[in-house]
Length: 352
Length: 189
Image (cartoon, rainbow over all chains, first blue to last red; front, side, top):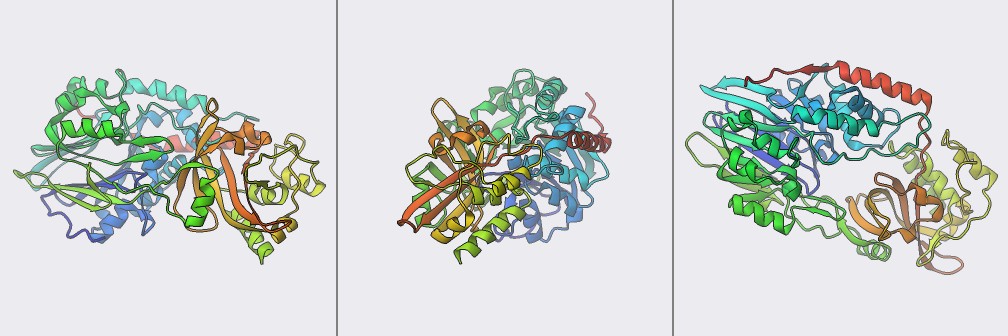
């Protein structure tokens, strides 16, 4: 896959990577600064997608100023450890919902150091932490990056997680901490997701909203953010990475009215895990009604990819056989001052 | 050739960083269930199999239910595996009797897949292990004796319990994790 030339020095870029299961984002800011959000694997190179992309553009990894892991779920952190190891100047940001003894014990139990394969997500976060002497807790109002470049003020701040969510997250982690003689099991995904880091990026008069996997909840989710006066004071975003793969559990009308410009450009990655398939047809219709220019990072088919003889045998004892990572794609948005977003798709990406 | 292939698969599974030693014990000690039938009440555990099972640690052979007899040599001589997958349960619906799982192929480089399995394919002795996140091994193979037939085997991985030493290590690691965390500046209201 060829990605052309890197963004110009004064150009904003949002590149959303999606292999059908997984998500990662690369943001370019004026002055040649990159921020990477989450991580997934590019299938041909088996590398973290952002690393593969930046190397294709001949971008130095020293220009990555920050790496943000929005949460610890497997589909958002594959390759995170390697990403942090290979970007030596990037500060690492983790959700403040993990800033408790209970959460740290949870991650420590499931990160594979004592017993393997209990949680890939916890393992990747553990590797990322191990690769740094320090990392930063991130909550609402945390400044990830603030500078002026080429005369343009740049601000990258977190709108979530909200502090009110921390005690609830603590309880959820505490419930899943193992005890002596308790059965060794795999780490569950804690739902709803109220621990995700949501980022708001302002570059001059432009802004972007990255919704991560935050779900709706009146106290801890999108309603709480959209009604918060400080969050409302942020510039309405003209580009939006749709929260939680476009699923209805993350839908909140006030997100669109309070945090986003009218008819923003929207991009998302799909999610399919067993019977859960996001976005659904209704989700797509809803998003398209709000953002006529909407794109999905992977539109490829999930038809099984295996020897037909084996597929036939497997189908005799199972149902709904489908490939997990349907096809890798990238949605790329670029913009310069006083111009519209230009949109490109690569690989399996396409209109929503 | 077949015994070499199966032995190699067993070694490969044993050395996968995330598999531990269970799969080789599985291949040596679990009877394949012919297509369309369920596992029946198993015979007594062979002393050698009991020793292997004991290597799990805290969970001793006395705790585990007896495994069905299936000497590895017979398995190797009369069968040819088509594929072995390491499965991870995504969700379980006990009411409707099925589980969803991801399947990661062990013998080939095929990409990961997901599928739905009726719980009737899970042996009675493994039912207590069926939960989200649980790991199982699914083998599809062809048996040549006494007659040519397709068969499959689905067995769950049984992990040991957490030990006191492991819990103490977890606590120490957690303290190390937290030590590195710093507060970043907050934007003004």
